[in-house]
Length: 226
Image 1 (spheres, rainbow, N blue to C red):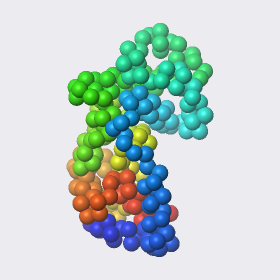
Image 2: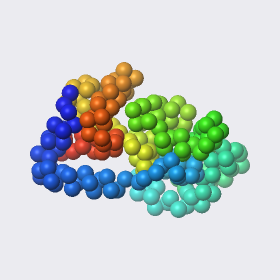
Image 3: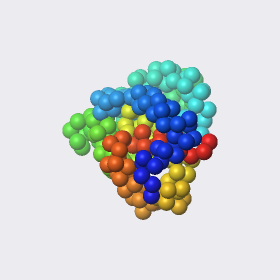
């Protein structure tokens, strides 16, 4: 396995040298939101919903309609939508302000229940739990979202976490290619054993560099030929 310093050198070769890479990564770092643990739970439910509806759909349509989603879901208060009624569902599947996909509408209820229950279990907002999840157990966080949330597996969860400001490792095509190139795994890490290997590599790179998962993910992606 290469060190992160060696991976950065590969990325620099592909992107105009060390100074150009440093500027690009600094711009990326500056673009990342901060303090996800301070975001209210309605913003977590809103962001999860946004990426659930974007999956397999034209994201520009979701972007354009998003103010309508906020209105239709009354600001995404988890305790409100954990109690979604049949009448609520009937109304929403007819609401032209949103994309009228019954399964994805029901995911709002299920993810609201997840956030509400998580807050009650820990005695603090769900965002304070999820937003301070240890980076050394990132795949544990993804498993929690997949198992207790609805439609929060795969990239929907990882992109939502990144949007919220959580340090996130996104298994894009280029990132997976870098992991395979460097011998961490030999194919996309979908199983627990492979994910354990990736987590161990990430922990080593974090220890080496002091960087978080988002920066490491971006560096790996930039080290692959476009």
